[in-house]
Image 1 (spheres, rainbow, N blue to C red):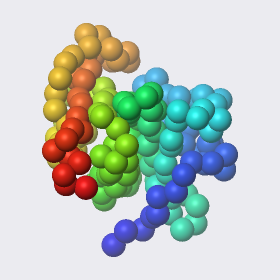
Image 2: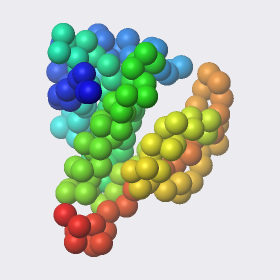
Image 3: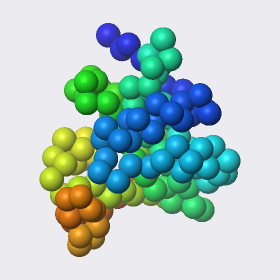
Image 4: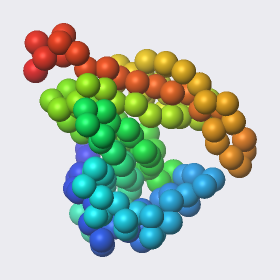
Length: 155
């Protein structure tokens, strides 16, 4: 049973999203960085929120022309394995199918659960960025999901 809903990020989420960032990433976004995104017309951030308002996870997307770049998908460790990341990603994939030519992202080489999630949604590995991540230093896999004419027939 789903114990959360997906909502657009607003100012009330910033402090908790920054906490999720610190739990999930070695170089987390700050509250100030997240707050800037509220005013960025190219950004869309969504939050998985419990009925009591607690933030369980979030995802961010930047769009330039017809390309979407997924910044982060993060779920609090205690809530992983419940389909939250899958639901967050699905929102962006559905948006991409309707509005974009492609979605792309980077993922740590060793983040196998995330890589499998992206494969499940149709992403393909298209490249690698050497030493992209710090703490620990690690390569990133570049994964992309392209939407073409075959997608339009399925909408």
